[in-house]
Length: 327
Image (cartoon, rainbow, N blue to C red; front, side, top):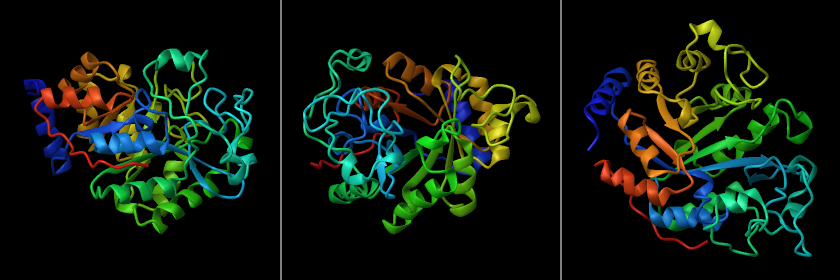
């Protein structure tokens, strides 16, 4: 069962937001520790297992197709050409490739000698699978009959490398167009480190929740510290009492999604007082999962949704039912 402190935080969240919401169990890139990331087999595995949300990333090809991929282009650790050779780094951006070209690459097996392969040695290879479109993912979910699972979709766009993707307005227009055409607007959240895209979503589709991704350690250009950057669309914690939750609230966010190592119980409480939900990334160890739940977070993004299900169950929280499906 949740700790006494966690219970207090949950009650506080109910008081400030007006309603209780279920814990959000999210499969990161479909559960990439188990199956090839951001592929239909990975998402089918997550749906069959039972998750609340499919977390994924999208880019847009030169001819306007919204594709599911964590990188802004072909990943040298994943993409193999028709001769079976992995593409050379850094990999061509999708913005410079037509969808028909993208579809020729096999992304079903990690490059054996890569750091990625060492990180996920148990990932099951599925040779021959291709980079899917967002429409194909929606079709898979329809096929599963799951009318409850949500989608947490990250816009893969880098303000410091404008040549590697569409500009924000066009990117968001393409993404929202697919979501609206497929009638999934009520089951989608849009997340990003590039807050420019989130502001556009808020303007153009205000009913879709926006998820503000943050990192506050290391030297990554996406870091949100004490000043505005190209990633934060002019927003700075320095203008909001040094508070990241208050900054995100001021920007119009619904969910704060920080790296789990940056989170404390006090910050979770502060976010809840601002009416924000807190969904942390990316948590793969059971002890860390349990600790996050105990300090009152609202959801966890994990490469190991199977382990997360175990911990969530042990904590007495409701588990989502699986809907078995094959890609």
